[in-house]
Image (cartoon, rainbow, N blue to C red; front, side, top):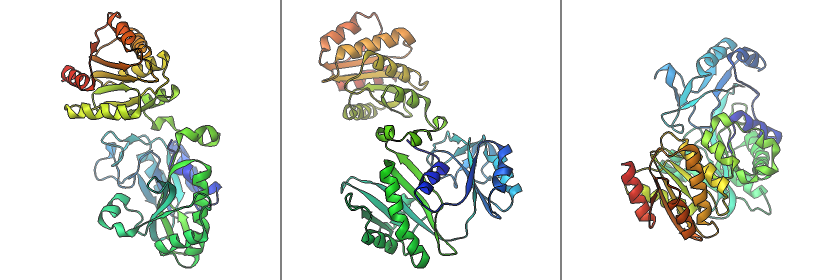
Length: 396
């Protein structure tokens, strides 16, 4: 689960991280009051969407010469003017795709005098099986660009899960970021704070870009991007309360209600599969034969008829879907349950696009019989290759 920048900063502030004062707003009418709560005289007006690259982004409605989604203001009046332009308009960044995202929230924050911009993130390094800090002196840039062009400027410091951030770890991070004086002292305190926040709140990513050294020599978290492990949210009601469903795909929200692993994609062939590996293979073979999958959807090993019905309805709710491929290998999952779910869903919502079904495994004959006797226009397939060829031909 992702949260907004201002929410991430509040979470980190609760652990003692240094962040600027700021106020989140959802209407232009709140902008003046929000700005006047801050010390000034410099303000930063930030679009709050679940996507990076906001500063370099462009608003669809404002033309190519308009300023981006993060703007400086030297007066309260200028901050209000920015809010009027930004709220309700669509911000397009590298991460949103061409469709962009509507800006429904802004964060008006006190400005900072910046001396240096640094990069810091915490993530799970699966190569070593530990949470690791990834840091660079090249803050404010796309870390992918830094990794490609100057990989020697990125330092990885894995943390022992038993000891946590040791003094030696903190010194190594300070050295990597070339911190001196008060900034170094702040770093020695900040790095254990960030690690504790990451672990205590079951984060999957904590990215601070940039972490700044201010002209007074102190460190400050200037931007923050945080993602949480969805499987651990049951432990964190306070984090669940931060969820902004307007930032999520409606189909993905519906899928989460049934514990379906669903991710919307840009293709035209809807997929319903059991097992993540088989789902990936199904998507690959669709691409092999010249089409693109419209989604990743894993119904899991213990799906019920109700769950399968819900999955089918979610797929058909996507207007981009021109055909559907159901690919089930029944080990724990029973093919007759899948068949009953498909038949129930088709009778409920109708079938307006080609449907190819491949069943194999437990109760496969019962499943095929249910489909055959349904009277529905369903194309059977013998194996995955056959299924992919048939659905691509039907759509193409």
